[in-house]
Image (cartoon, rainbow, N blue to C red; front, side):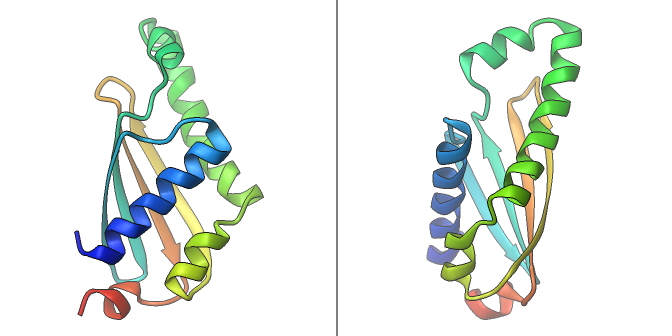
Length: 119
């Protein structure tokens, strides 16, 4: 992870903390073409971990976590990320493994950020 990818990780953590109350404890970002791929650990709050102890709770939590995060970025475009990268945010793809408390988000931008920041 280079310094730009590390700074992007900090922006993701800050955005999540601001809009969800808690950010992941660890984020690793990789720029690939026009994607910023973020691997995230330590996403769940203590209450969410308790909810996940029941099977129905686990399914509801996964659905809520993935859809809620996508909706959060739709309603609150990540201006800080756009300013930092100098390009426009297009969309985000999100998934989480509740058992491992490991999530991934793929941020799509309108320019090749790998070429811009990794050469």
